[in-house]
Image 1: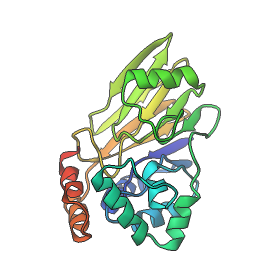
Image 2: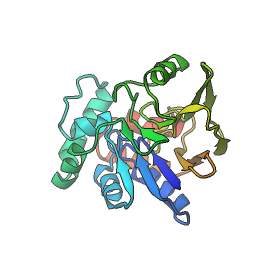
Image 3: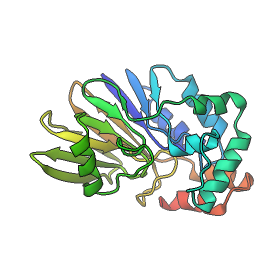
Length: 246
């Protein structure tokens, strides 16, 4: 089976559109969306409408989805994120707000090999930023492969014989052959707001038969996404960072 792994779209319609254009000739048995459909960007309804329309898709919630749907206050958000979350709540259609409200909380087991989470499988709002964070997850979970998001950094942590290794992904296309005797934490990166100083949209494809994962970077119309943010009256920093990948 082939899986399309998406995460952290953050209301960036232009980025999501380019990702789907890049895979339109490919067949996927299942799409896994790791949360944060909305927040930061200016196209929440367009993004949610696309995700809602997909078939054979599993979607879990992210922290921005919860706040934008009114499930949480967002008191821990910084000022731009808080402004964006409030704006998103007001702009979402009732159908899309209800859709976000009903999203599943991670972690979620997909099959015997794969589980998904937004943040850490130990707490959906926690970040996995380091080998130490990853090690805590490996010690307290059993899934062979866990796809996670939240940090906006494409990275693969492997764990075997009590040794942990971090593989940071920087190429526009990078394929890794995985070992069935090794466990993995894999972050496909962010579609809508990359933070690894690479502005291209990031996503992953998992081939369960070949036991390979490929991470991709796709260019998109950043200028149009920025103009939407400015026109919406959202903080200009949310537009500026898209060009920088920070």
